[in-house]
Structures are given as C-alpha cells and as structure tokens.
Length: 154
Image 1 (cartoon, one colour):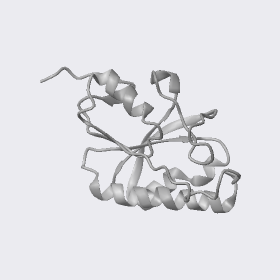
Image 2 (spheres, helix red, strand yellow; image 1 turned 90 degrees about the vertical axis):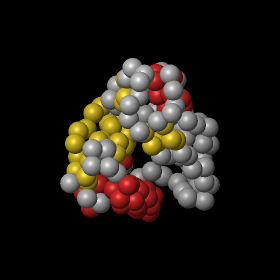
Image 3 (spheres, rainbow, N blue to C red; image 1 turned 135 degrees about the vertical axis):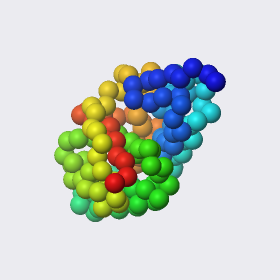
C-alpha cells in the first residue's frame, strides 16, 4: 500500500468528491500533492442559466435565496450518501453578503453539524486559482476572508 500523503486537511487515503470545482485547479493541486487522483472525483457546472447574468449582485435577496436553495439541496442529497465517518467541506466567504447564506444553518436543516471551521488560505494549495460562477467564468476574483466549514452527520 502506498504511503499516505497530506496537504492541509486532506489526505491521499480519503475518498474526495469535489463539487463546483470551476477550472479543476483545486483537484489538480490535490492530485499533485498525492501523486495520484485515484480517490478524487471532481465536478463543475458551467451554466449560464442558473444565475441572473453578469450584472446580478451577490447581495441581491433573490440571488442569496437562489444560492441558499442550491446549497440546501446539495446538503440534503449529500447527507444521504455520506458514510458515518465522512465529512462535507464547504469553502465559503465569511463577510457580508455571503454570511446571509447561513451555511451552518443550511447544514443543520439537512441533519449535519459543524465539526470545525478553519480559515482558508489559498496559498496553501499550490496551483489553485479561484474562478467566478457568473459573468466571465474564466475570471479570478479576490477571495477576501474565507473559511472551510467541515460538517458531519448527527
């Protein structure tokens, strides 16, 4: 068996599903650190129809509601597939208007509890480049204060 390799709070021995991976640079970073992508599945949705267009505001109440519904639905589905020792990690901005998403409450509604919240530092993941979800999807943006929220089943 190959020696376990780690990067921040991820390990080559974990089965990792990355959802909403953008340009797959985070998955590539993990695969490089592990010398393998054997336990990694990464997905991305490039949909111009989901958000209201490049001129929509992240603080718009209807945008916030749309995001909350999407994340809540994800948590509900993921809860059903999560093994007893598994975790769901969500990296998310922690300043307004993103705090309005109420990530921890959405998880709780889905039967998940917050295990830990860690400050996210993109420099800890060599090669990772964040990308926009609306407008010019190939454009990076300033992350600002962000955390990785780790959830598990009750």
